[in-house]
Length: 132
Image (cartoon, rainbow, N blue to C red; front, side, top):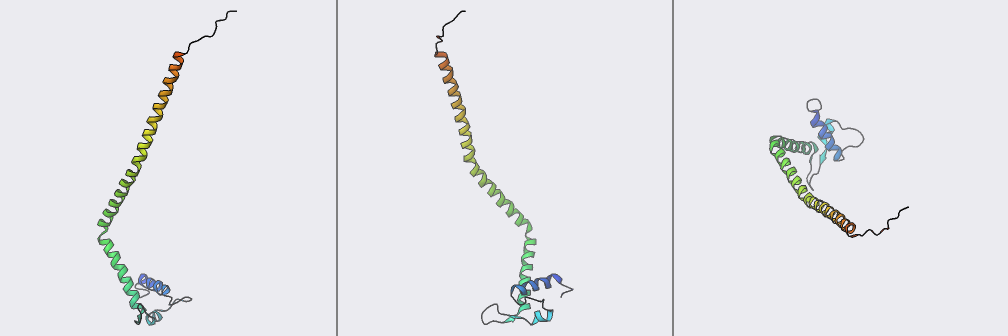
């Protein structure tokens, strides 16, 4: 198994380590085959059987993802579009607020200019003309 299926063997070793079957030294294939585990109370099975079943489940998931990659990509695109629309909806009130703020200050500036012009127009110049 180590030479023909190194990835499978590596995955089984990782699972054995996760189950706490070894800590210091790597077990031999014969030791791995001899380990018993209890996935449920009062049930004892060989560790290799549990490990291979787990690898099989992972492989099925990978195959399913490969077979449905087009649908998965379409779902990702749809989710991104929905998030973008939601973000745009959140941005709209802020844009409206910014536009209203600009319009308000532009109108206020025009009002102040008009008031200054009226004050200047209504002011009578009473400075005496002095000749030297």
